[in-house]
Image (cartoon, rainbow, N blue to C red; front, top):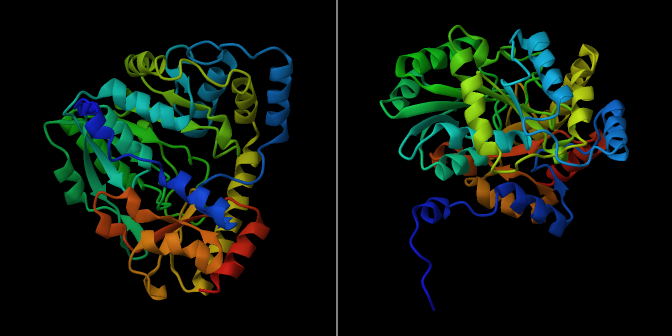
Length: 392
């Protein structure tokens, strides 16, 4: 039997197996559990968007779209950025449509990083971040978010220590998955100052940009809008979360022309293009009135409160999120000491699936007793989950 050749890329990717989301969703199906693990809604997005997709399919828009994305979507993204965040991006050269934010992140890191470059990121982090950094041969420099007075925060000294002569970029997700933290103006100013000092780029994952709750300590502010940051920031978002179409995988990159050009050169050899008939439908959705975005936020905030109250009643120590689809909770009051063991046992104990937060940390002990629940579900699903969790 011939041995598999030793290859640095194979070695780098060996730690990355099946994602925790796939594992826990499969466990939910196998056990008939309520799945609050993976962050996908169980309702559809706006009717106008769905109708536009059907019309595009029936209208023959089923072949390869233009490489950068269909013109109407790039124009809609540009108008959206200007209307909500005061950022000007040229649809022709400063906006690229991608196969969701996950591809955008991977393509950006591959485009900007060389082997040995360092990437500063905040942990816990979405699992694709670590995989994308490894694919590029770069090195993670995590900064841990810890609970301070009931909110997630980072130590400014730890953030500064993560930067160095090999720092190529900082990867920032706000509103943050899985913690629900919204980075404040002060947080962002510290990041911006260090990027300028060390000549680093910023890559911002802002897929939850419209899902910031009214009681959050800060509103969402794009890092690209801070002085000096537009020309060194690649801004990423997508349609999936705001418009309840996670399966469509339509995302976008905004940034200065040289950076977007670099990302485009990588993206074209990943998926080439994607979602031809869905792109014009997302353009329709992006042109929704402000009331749509407010309603989505308000509905989700009610679901957050519904689940947080239920988790508290079930005995968890709940960390109320400021945004996103997710709430993290400490299992210590329930006698839990390890989130992976707790989540693997939970379906048999009460028929609910959650995700152990520790898998999103390099510093595993920092998240060992935390688990994540998704509340982007119908009220009756949340109520059933809470009823089951009360059996613990």
